[in-house]
Image (tube, rainbow, N blue to C red; front, side, top):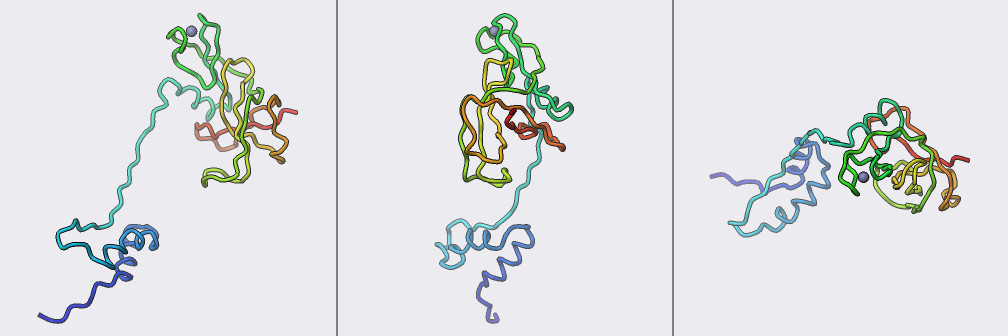
Length: 183
Ligand SMILES: [Zn+2]
């Protein structure tokens, strides 16, 4: 038997990062312990791999709400005729009497009931700080949470009037619109 070269973790990281399409530093961090100071000879031997899953997420009874956002840029609520209550976010069934609700179109204007100013977060948001507001839409009896976009976040206040502003490219997501000051 000839002399074998020692395990080269750098070459291994490069090879597998390229194969899996992941960052070299992530792979090195996850495996350096095992490569640098091998565990016992019978401990589990781990190899990197990727698992991708695509799936369909069903919006169930709220489906029309999201479809209307995408296709018609409008906000729909749901109304219980028996209780006389209108919900947005909509509910397919009334939480008070358990009866079926019916869809109603809302004007998209409302009042800030409470809010918080967010300074840190994920890449899902384009700029910081931003205001996350709970808004009672006109014609409803509940509150809906969305981004309140304004130049000066310090001007946000409870009781301020807002309206919806839809994005040009919409996906049928709650992020298809933001609130902006109405005045
Ligand atoms: Zn009801």
